[in-house]
Length: 475
Image (cartoon, helix red, strand yellow):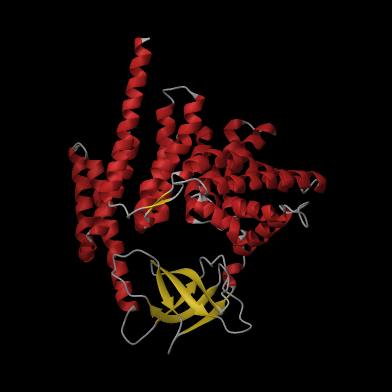
């Protein structure tokens, strides 16, 4: 698996760099060592120089990011003066404004993720994604190596939060918002005023990421069954939408070699319409590489696409190696791809179907246990049924939106089919959440617990494959 060697070296270098954040100011020395290793290794043709250079590149980038972060937090936490900055709204809470008038929004301040907590006066509209707010508030104090999102409290003397401009919602942002509202409206054709209108909201949450529309009881059902991730726009959604585009183009007699040229812009339009979240962008980048491979007369290679996406993202944003969402997204996708490679030697459709779900769960379980102290074995059973249902739901809903431009009657039938699949997903999640040990609380796992889990998982896959190969050679 030489394709994974470079991402592994880069990730290890960034982990070591962030672990050594106390010497972040020494990043120029690490950068010099990288240049020295790369030049000498290439000139002398030293074996393994490339991996060493990649490690040092990740180490230097992490030290630089840590140094910038430490200086930013030091300046922002100056005693007696609140932090003051213009912040672009990157995310708003699904529940909207609380009863007491308090709300919040997510933003980034010089590379530091912050959540601005503020009180809205009467008549003031809540923050919207893309707007710019001028804020002054007290930054929550934590160690510089703590990468969790920090709160900025807009309360007390000398603090304020004022909408500075709505310009962020013009142009492409306004265009994508308008497109999303139009698609959301078309997904409800034929379901208004019926008993399935609530499931239309489930469809919108699944496809458009509008989780604020999810009824509270439905949300809790998916949380208890460990399947709320189905509503996070990620690899599953992007892969299904990309496949729909490819199949549609093939049916329209577009040569397979050129389907990617047409499908890639459509896929990125979908990603922009649903908010261009990090997980969706990562998945779309991988899908782009795979879909364009036939154009260059190459076979799509998921692992190579994963490796290229990983390297680019972590060279541009080295701090993403500390993001739980990023680690979970990349790890689960890698687990699925490795399982697909492993399962090819068995040539069994049953093993592929069952193992796909187990591999996705097993790859992400240690990260969830480490961060949240929870294992969800029920997710294996739920995902086994929910993933196919989600695929059918997305297909029916997308076809319903397309049909709405031609026939509202046909769109209503397709939307009704999507609502039936949504109802089935809610029912499955409810049944799984009632199973014993569907969700188990545990002590947060340590690094060594996670390493042992992955070691046992990898060893088990190797042993099973070795036994299968020997039996095939014997008979």
